[in-house]
Structures are given as C-alpha cells and as structure tokens.
Amino acid sequence: MPKEFKFPDIGEGITEGEIVRWLVKEGDEVKEDQTLAEIETDKAVAEMPSPYSGTVLKLHFKEKEIVKVGQVLVTIGEKGEVPPGKTAEEKIEEKEQAAPAPSVVGVITDSREEIREILATPKVRKLALDLGVVLRRVKGTGPQGRITEDDVKNAKTAAPPPLQEEKKPAVRIKEKFDFYGEIERIPLRGIRRATAKRMAESVSKAAHVTHFDEADASELGKIRESLKAQAAEKNLRLTYLPFIVKAVIEALKLHPLLNATLNDEEEEIIVKKYYNIGVAVDVPDGLIVPVIKAAGQKSLFDLAEEIQNLAEAAKKRTVDLADLKGGTFSITNVGMIGGEAATPIVNYPEVAILATMKIKDRVGAEKGDIKVRKTLPLCLSFDHRVIDGAEAARFMNDLIARLENPDFLKQLS
Image 1 (cartoon, rainbow, N blue to C red):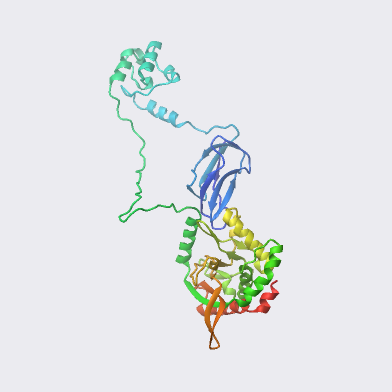
Image 2 (image 1 turned 90 degrees about the vertical axis):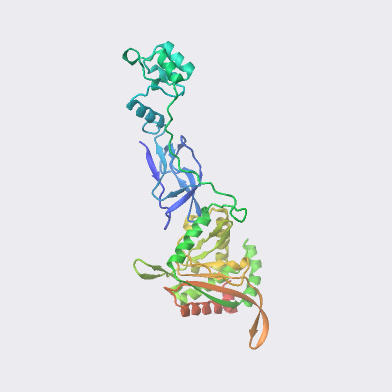
C-alpha cells in the first residue's frame, strides 16, 4: 500500500523549504534512511532521508519549487508496486465510453489492442488502421452496432470536432527591458529568500534602535599579534572575533536583558542564562548565522577553531541545521570588508545584535591633543521594547572597557 512522506518540521520555526535537487526518480527502489532530496530550509541545505523502503511512485514537487511543512513530498509503495488507481488515459477512455458515442471523430491512430475490442470485421479493422481512424469513437450502423467500411470512410472524410484541451494558466511574459533600458530578473530563492523573510519579520515585530560607539583597539591589536604564532601551530587563523565574543559575554553577564527573547503571546521577557553567540557569515547569496553553543565555557582558541569551522561549513553549504538554532545574541563582523558604521537588523527573536566595523588608524582627541589611534567602531542594534537606550549605552561602556583592558585581554590566552 502506498505511503505518503510529508515534508516534516525539521527545525525550530521551519515552515517551508526549496527543493535543491532530487537524488531519486520515479520508479527507483529506495531503502529506509536513503537520501531522497536536498532541501534548503532556513538558510541550510538539509538532506531528506526516506522513512520507508520501497518504490518511488511519485515525486510531488520539481526542483526549485517551494514545499510547505505538511505537504506530500514523495509517495512510496512496496517494492515493485505500481501507482494505485487507473492511468490518465484509462480515465479518459472510461469517460468517453460513459458519454454518448459521437458519429465521427478525428484521425488519432488506434492500437491493435484497442481495435480488437470493437465490433468490426478484420477487413474493417485494417481499413481503420490504414486511414488512421479511431474505431472506438465511430458509431457503427451495421447489425448490433457493427462498424462497416462506410462508417470508417465517413469518419475519415468528416471534419473532426474540436478537441477539448486542458486549460493552462496564461503565461506571463517577463520583459528584458523596462522603459529606460535593459534589466535582469533574479528569482528570490534560497538564502536570499530566507534572509528577506527573516529581515521583514524582524523589522515588523521589533522596535529597532542603533547605538554607535568606538573602542581603542591598540592593545587588542598588540595582543592578537602576540598570539598569532601560537594559533598558527594549531592551524588556526586568529582574528579579532574570538576576543570580541569573549568581551561580549562578560558584558552580557552584567546586562542580562540583552541576552534574552521576548515572547509576544505570553507577554514575557525570557532571559537566557547561557551564552549561544551567533556569528554572521557572508556567503555569495546572503547571510548565514551559525551559532557557537555554550560560548561562555570555551577558550579563546576553542572559539577561534569553532568560528573557523562553522564559517567554512556555511560557505560550503554543509552547515548542520542545528548549528543555526538556539542563538541568544548575534555578532556581524562588517569590518572584515570595511565601513565606519551600520544599522544591523536584530536576529529575531533575539533582542540585540552587535556590528563590528573596520579597525584602522583614526584621528581623535585625547586630553586636549590630536592623536592617531587604532579604533574599532561598534554598532549595537536592539529591540527598544525590551532594552532602553541607557541600558544599551551601559552595555557598550562595559564592552569597550574590556576590549581596551590589556589585563582582561591577556588572561584570555
């Protein structure tokens, strides 16, 4: 008996996915847990294993199509089973036989199997084959409805009635030019589609405010340089990000409201007592935010290794869906590309996100003197429903104090 495999909810908040590619086709024999398809959901490409062994009877979606949670992906029957019910041709034939037989028809050639079911002599059957007349659509005028040669000839010469074609939706022609010139149309799919939905959700549900500040990165730069050789021995590329993650966690301990979510339905703020830090990774068609679980319990080099591994997996699209869930606070490192300031969108349902900009020499005043210092611009976006501006400013002060404190930075190694 055929079994329907419906697209399951494979992760928190997943409602749909895009078929990246099918790894089986209709008629294939499959085993339980064999991968049927690759489906992109919530910025990750997940392999979809078969829950049953048997024969693939029907693939209900094509590649690049969107499937909703709960919709049937695949119908799988017993080994060697064929699809239940009658074929489309058989259903059409039944419908035609139930309706009054027309006197004449068109010129669709019958098979010999079809002709044997008709009341006609072998000579009439051959004539029908030669003339291309469908005998089962000819009304016989002979005894007991037998079809005669004249019936076949009349069917051949008569004008066929118009065939009832299935109505197809009108095809919308998409122009390659607008009023001003040439354009290109890019389908909103994959990561870009998921990003667009998440950003729209965040903007519509959270009250966004961004606080801008700046940290002196002179000591941070020196200590990072002093540890690069040690990191290289571990095959690690030591960036500024592990230091920033460590400093962020210490600041979050002092300002727990920034490490929370807001439950709108229950009207309550849920403060997280653990620190799962999301790190935005730039990929060709959008952003992926893998999450470092239990980041507060990991060393500087442990963080560097995990950030490196998660970033590589994200870029190769092999990151596990579980690694994209459970974040409590996010960091987006825009500085590796450049820029002075940004207004990042909160990674909803989190309530805060930090954008780190490019560290470089900047001119500033210090005790009445003009000096050139290496500085790190910091941009904190937060949900004003949960966090007040003063609390955000205090968080940034404590974060900056740690990023500028050589004693704090040295103990991280």
